[in-house]
Length: 397
Image (cartoon, rainbow, N blue to C red):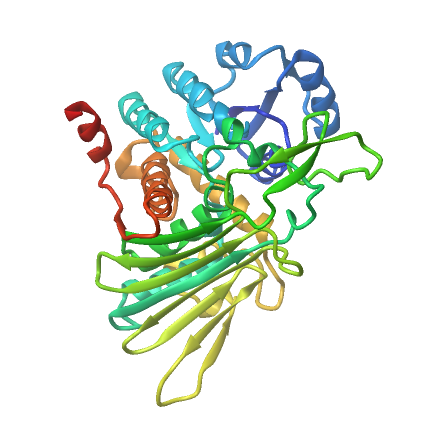
């Protein structure tokens, strides 16, 4: 089997995890990376153990050895680079969110469909074996009709007002911060696991830290800040807390709490689904356990054991029972699915069921956009627009 060649654009924090996942596959060659400048690309190539650094992303796209492009740039560059890659006939694996806003996401969705290549968004929590187990159980009616879908995604990395990142700058990260960054993961997970769609939202957003002390030099996400660094005060307009009520198209109700300024919560993602027959809950920080709740019998805790999992979930568990698998393994599962799809031509009918595509990324943008509209309207219910609906409205305006 000939190896596929991949190139990566934007070698920041998440890039190392893309490269690690690819290295765990046997059929992919890392051709090179491109950064914000030739010098920075060379520096990061040495640090990440990559043989070649391109002078620009355009040079990377022009290389016929690169068949797959991983776009791990800041949000405001997603559209430009992914669109150029699609037009160059490359398969694209993009970090979430798909783009900085819903209009750009629609453009990328349309371009990917027209290009006829594999297009993937890294909603990587889908790659956990017990997430797929939960999805299989719901699809087979084990919970009965879902009535409530609720959870949270809580972090504390932005608690200190001296922490600043490009994600807080609307020009770089988009209009939403907490919802766009981590709330998007929860929404995708809830829809993927339940098979239902969020149809309407009521959102209350808040900025708990309205002024931050940013370093004079640009700040990378998750970078440690030196207390002696020269700083400037920056007014923050995007939310760091969000409380959202949800309605699903199958009649279920729901709620979501999102925050990034909550001491003690590191990466606290939790999803619970309550049905008429049973309930289930999964937590990212305890990924090898699935809680199953009952009314007239004892609750149970299903641990990640390939022998006990549904056949649809078993392929996402690679180690025997008692050997934990976690975040990096789930990320590897998603990347493995992506390359399996590419091997099959990237056609819609060959996409693995658990793999999120640009269609899912666009859909997710519509959900987050509805939350922003709800808050801007004073906290009233807003319908999640159907794909293409916003474009039609603009044309009529």
